[in-house]
Length: 168
Image (cartoon, rainbow, N blue to C red; front, top):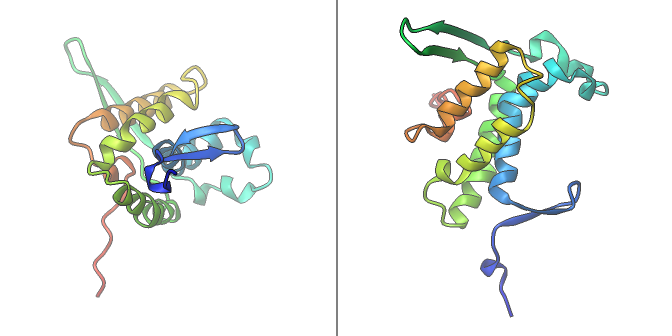
């Protein structure tokens, strides 16, 4: 007899009809809140929000800033800034702290970013085609990809979480 603790961490996806790694589900939700739902999907597929038009209000969306420049030799410099709205940051923080981190702890995951990284990369590369995106939004996605792949990047950095103020 197998105990539930002996099973691999998977989630049955009733929509997609298969088993998915729980880390992939977490990464998908987190990156949707961070980038896809916060900017790219409302910008490139607004019909998705037909039933929720308030999600497309300018006050609900933060426009990213992206700067591209030649470095004078052979390279290209990319600098971007994109912080989700305070409401999205709140959702991301609670989901991360109250669901992702406790599950990772229960599964004895010691490197949360290492666990999530391959799935974050897949989400960054596989959700929207760069052919659909403007040059700035493609650069934003590639900048986030580079950050995600950097070995010193933390989950909080990838998710653009601002430090939580200490209670007074």
